[in-house]
Length: 173
Length: 102
Image (cartoon, rainbow over all chains, first blue to last red; front, side):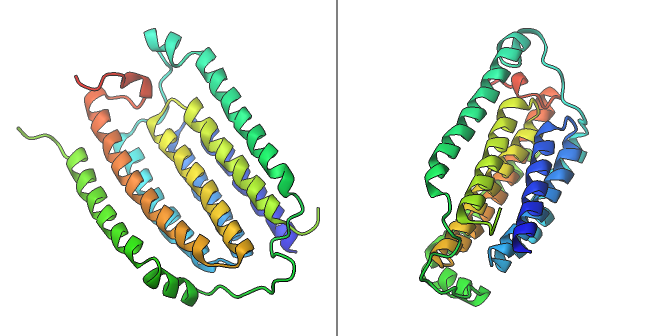
């Protein structure tokens, strides 16, 4: 059952992600990315991480993707322009694109090379009993060990908020 | 096939990361490039959660929490920059933005 769920969710995630990258319309990309996040959230449930599964839906699909949707609608630029002129030859041409595909393929090969030694590693190490990782444990650790990082995060959010407002405002001079 | 092992999750995450990288290279649209970066961040999150499950600690999940916060900040600032650039040039093609000052 768990195996079946893993393969289904993995297939949905990979296919939705491929379609995100393959779309020309950014609106469809955003919607497909939400599908991918939903499947990833299922994978987090399989990994006994219900907290992460919940914030994946609430923060990623609910907040960040809505932000993206707003910007896509605001800019109203449904399709991407074909490269023209000088840039068609230099940056947007077939050569650099092929180079990009080759680079990502090399990345896949490198990652496969690294992972080849790890095969057959069980998800729970042998000899260890499975500990329950509850939201309570996460909360205790987050507010004790990681208290400074948590507070620093609030400053980061404030800076991002102020920066976004200043960057996106209309210049009135 | 058998039970999904740690390796399965890491391989899935590697595939997702490569898809995100390919998206950054291939797409000629600033918004889709930002979305590809989100795909890459999610691949890394999956690695963290799988590793946290393997080591039986919650640290992986806490790091995911921080990664999501940084992703939210990055999306907000990145989209603000995209809006500012679109006001100047009326296009989303990254090729149009080759000068730092105009």
